[in-house]
Image (cartoon, rainbow, N blue to C red; front, side):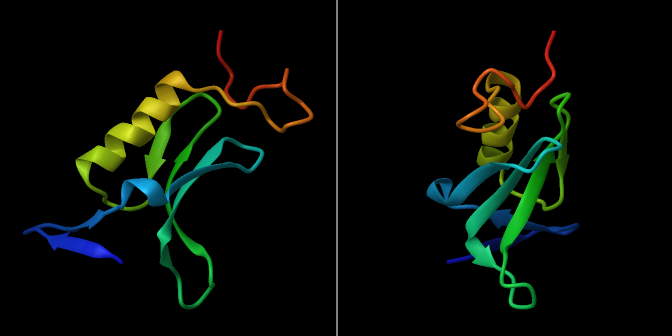
Length: 94
């Protein structure tokens, strides 16, 4: 179920907490929700992208809890590139 709040300037998507997903595509982490599916592409809605230097770019306007969860992931997590390459991390940290 998709919930939207319309404000004077923009529409804010309310993302159910259990539908937020993080996936590695080779150039950082893509953040998407399984709660919203595109009719045209039959793909889940992309919310944001976390670059390898942990800069977050949002593609959708989402609620503050979702923003906080994505920023916390960028700040605190550093997942491996894959299950077989556990020593190679996604983010470039010093």
